[in-house]
Length: 210
Image 1 (cartoon, rainbow, N blue to C red):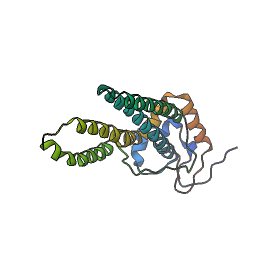
Image 2 (cartoon, rainbow, N blue to C red):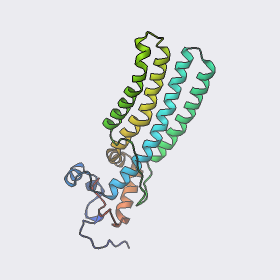
Image 3 (cartoon, one colour):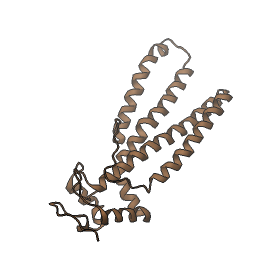
Image 4 (cartoon, rainbow, N blue to C red):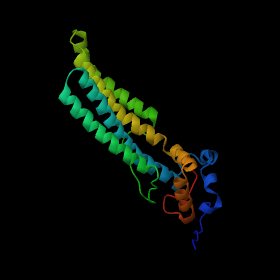
């Protein structure tokens, strides 16, 4: 029989899973308080962000291959689009598997990138603008803009894939766990199991809220 240790914090069994997932309860406790549910959500979001970024990169390579095709660069187009398709397909498979994965207690991930969609857009926009500063002389000189447009297009796809997409996934991590728990019985069952066996540990004193 599972016995919860004595603690100044409410035990996991003090509320149902649905109550722990309640957005109003989350709002009352603030977004910075560490809980097991938030640990799960953040860990899932980090891994899903990684695979989402690879998926976006693969899709971007397919788009870039199509652009090469327009210019008649058949070899580059086929190679780029094929590689991108393989990466995108594999990433989509792993991303789907991550949906039902529950990180172990203490399993943590870190990122040096933005953690919100807005932050990702700001970072990507700043880098895009900084690179384009070097193209200003060529634009003013009336040079052929085709190479610049190709570089800008590829750069935009790269920045969106590497900064905007993962930042959006990370920022949506807790809401995504709530949605998955409401829609997917497997996720709900896994979280319910966590609720019944979880015990407080250093730094994570409460099971919820999310």
